[in-house]
Length: 414
Image 1 (cartoon, rainbow, N blue to C red):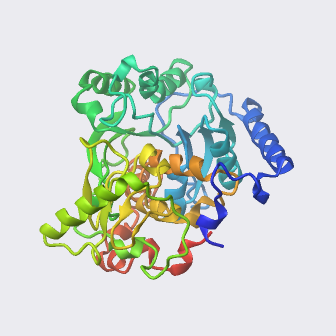
Image 2: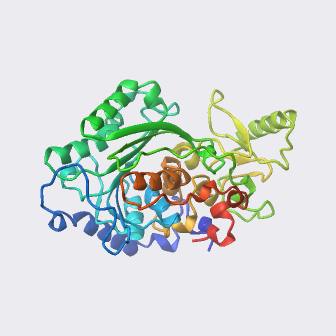
Image 3: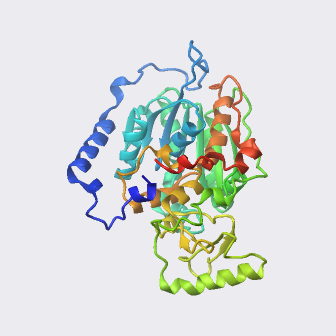
């Protein structure tokens, strides 16, 4: 069954997957996972700097992962898509439907809802902790209030987590990976410097860079700040930018396929579509053949269009139905938006526990999986969790040109 058929709109009330008994059972399962806690944890107090062997005696590598602001749990999705074995030790996610998805798909040892009420020092030991705090306080399309926005303080939560572990003389995660709006380093450099200073005082090596999704294999313009703090076994390097992305046609439903569920185009947006078509034609493109992405929902100030490359998919744009595409005469489908984040739909394990709107919101908030697929193995090697560097399939230009993870037609289905 097609992913877009599996996801009803929130206003739809007569679908089978809204059965109250099923929802009650799912909520009970999530609560059970949340309550599962410290009785299984190690009580030993050790030096906070990690120094244990990179693998078990049998040679199997099992990366222990913890996630903050987990959302669609894209770090686990990334590790799963590249075949790197891992165990999700804990996840922290506020939204009920996303916690249900995480519980059903990844079965974390602990599952928490409110990052502000979690006992940080009591969280299970992990090798890598990953998180992207809400970017709205710092992003151009958000409030731009920085630390004056109540959500702004959340950017320090992962730092507070390792500080709490260190204060209790408990093992620290070997590495942290944090994602945030690029303006954090530019406009709020004091916040960025504070994060860096506090982590280096704990003995971490710290590196950061700006990473654009479209320079790492997926045609979406999405530039973010990535920060890595790690205990060095090998020197960490961010992946080099790629010259090739997956062709846009591999990321979309075929042009002949018209029986798709998409958000309707408002009548007042027709003029904007006409303007984009004209400007694209004047620039030498054919809007009936070339994929011209058009923003129908922004203000006139932020209005834009791009050819053969998606603009940044934000939470609001995804909730609104994604970009309009001139050569298809429609907006994006759910699975097309997932693809633009590097997510093969079946990697989510099933999304019928969520409304369409909730899933779209989570897609816009997610970290790009193709970026995580390239960064996480490099971190794992740098902290000694891999015996050798892992092959990066994204370096294979021919693989990308064939469609990468989206070459197999079956990958479009759950």
